[in-house]
Image (cartoon, rainbow, N blue to C red):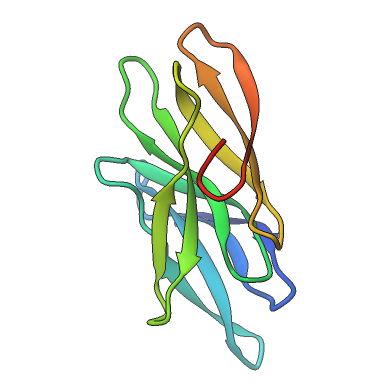
Length: 136
């Protein structure tokens, strides 16, 4: 169906998303497989989530984005990173948001692994966040 790319690192690894159907959207990564071709890997999503998106990738291949689960009226976004494993797959990790906030997205990651993004409180206030390790 449809797909889009949001970020590329120095090794040519591209992070983006792919529609599997009109409502089934997953974060994906395209890795160079030689002679201008790319292999695609579905990064998956958190348990219970409906979709996932990527927004950034660093030179170690760690990807920042979100995984969305159903909410009362709208989807709830969970800030996540995907880390490459030795087996060639990716491990997803949810990033915590401050107490009282329920919605978060990771929009950027640098080569030191510092992640930048935002979260929203229950009354709709947006908060800028920086994660170092696993703490906001």
